[in-house]
Image (tube, rainbow, N blue to C red; front, side, top):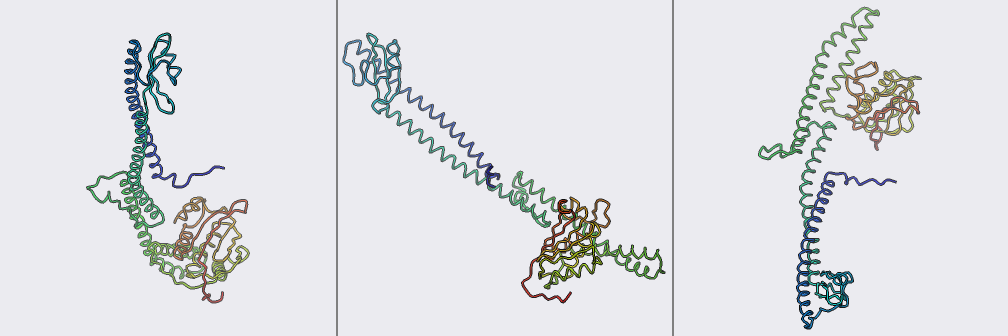
Length: 428
């Protein structure tokens, strides 16, 4: 079983801390080794020089027949075998070993009859010096690494905090808050040199401002077109009603009605875009409301099934909720195939058809006005309005496709908040 790393392990701060720690450890180890080797060589060389000097003096005394100084002798006990063999071969040498638990520097040279003349010097002080140096290197390296980590963490945290703020603003913009701006301090103060984070923040702010201008321009255009069309359409509708009965008149009236519906949809979308819609809340029974919606749509019958698995009361705006469900049912009949099933299960209402399902772009990105695919009729406004009205209601509208193994088709799920108060709507 593969164990995944914790979420923080992949953050920029964690990677920077790991990099800084690794570099500090490598640098401290390199410097420590260099200092240790240099001081050790110097200490050993000094001790070797003293031992060899003592050996020269002992050799002179030995050859003169004088008494030897303490810690000097012929083949003394504890003399390393390799050093004894070197002296027996006529060479001089030195070696550091432990003699009776004490670090000792040995120096040995040739004596008469293949014996070795050796000098033993106490090496304890030199060994303690090297050990003390090693401890100092370890402590100083640890202190340097800790200080570097603290300073590096402070610097990296400042950068990551700015990156997190930029990412948060980007998420707000993607959620629809086009007024959100990063406002990085380095982009506001011309005296401070900009860095890469400031460049990203400035680019995000510029993108949000440009997107907001384009969206406001589109919203104004939609509202203006709808308002301008409303007056001549009213006159055109009245004139169509005065035409004599006949097939041409029916065609004209049908097209006028479709154009009026499109205009009203555009006006509704423009009102939703402004965000000034106000709820007229009441408590409604979803089962009865669903039946009213199906009857009003003219889709009641064998082609539309209403299933009330568990009825529920919700606090909602009845007109807006009927608009949402009506658009979902109409969209299912227009773009899907029958039978269409409207199911009420507590505060959750689903509308399913048995057609080819929603287009992939719609499932991934949501409805887009005036976009349809696959030769479908309509203007792509029905689901846009349903989604907008659902947001006004504080409900969640999810669009998905039913797997082919389960029969296929499009599935719209509307989730509302269940009411705890008594119902206030009348009978269905």
